[in-house]
Amino acid sequence: MPQPNNSQNAHYIEHLGIKALKSSHPGVRRLKRQQQGHSAHGNKVWRSSFVLMDYLSTYPPAPKSRVLDIGCGWGLTGLFLAKQYATEVTGIDIDDSVAPFLALQAEINQCAMAFQARGFETLTSDELSGYQTIIGTDICFWDELTEPLFDLLKLAISAGVERIIIADPGRPPFWDLVDRSAETLDASVVTRRIYEPWKTEKYMLVLQS
Ligand SMILES: C[S@@+](CC[C@H](N)C(=O)[O-])C[C@H]1O[C@@H](n2cnc3c(N)ncnc32)[C@H](O)[C@@H]1O
Image 1 (cartoon, rainbow, N blue to C red):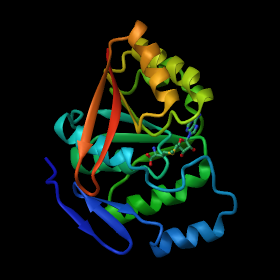
Image 2: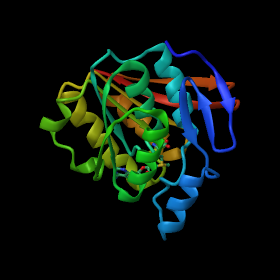
Image 3: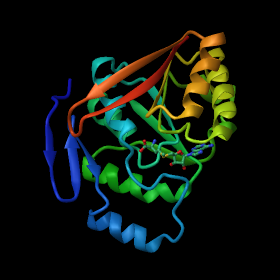
C-alpha cells in the first residue's frame, strides 16, 4: 500500500508515490506553448484525482485487473493505479490534446497506461465488459454531460463492470447523476476529505454490480 508521503517540488506535487505535474514544469510549459486552444478542461490535474487516489488506496482494485479512466485528462489516477497496483489501465478523453501531457506524466512516474482519444458515449457494451473497474474524476461538469454519463453507467453495469467510481467537487450535474443512479442502480455516495497535498473534500458516486 502506498505511504501517504507528500513532497513539494517546483515542478510537481508528489503524493501517494505518484508525481502530479504542475503548470510550472518545463515540459508542461513547452506543450502549452505548442498547443493553441487546448480546451475542454483537460488542462491540469484536477483535485478530485487526489481524493479518488486516497479512496482507492483504501479500496484498491485487484492486481492485474483492467481499469477504464473516462475523461482521463492528464491521467493521474490511472497512472497511480498502474504504478501502485499493477492494474492494466486505459484512459479515454474526447480531447486528444491531453495525450502529450499524459505521456509526460507517465514518463516522470516511470509507468504506463493506454490512451484513446474518444468520447465515453462511443463505448460499447462489448468493450465495457472487458473492464472490472471504471473511474472518472471531475467529468460531470456540464448539464449536458449528465444524461450520456447516466447511460454509460447503466450500460457498464449491465455489461458486468464490477465497480464504478465518479469523483466530483459536488457540482449540480453531478448531484443530478447521483439522483438518477440512486433510482435504478446500486448506488451510494461517499464523502472523502484529504489533508495532503491540500485540505479538500470531494464526493464519490460509487456503483457496484
Ligand atoms: C475537468 S477535466 C478532468 C480531467 C481528469 N479526469 C482530472 O481529474 O484531472 C474533464 C475532462 O473530461 C474530458 N471530457 C469531457 N467530455 C468528455 C466526453 N464526452 N468523453 C470523454 N472525455 C470527456 C475533457 O476533455 C477533460 O479532459
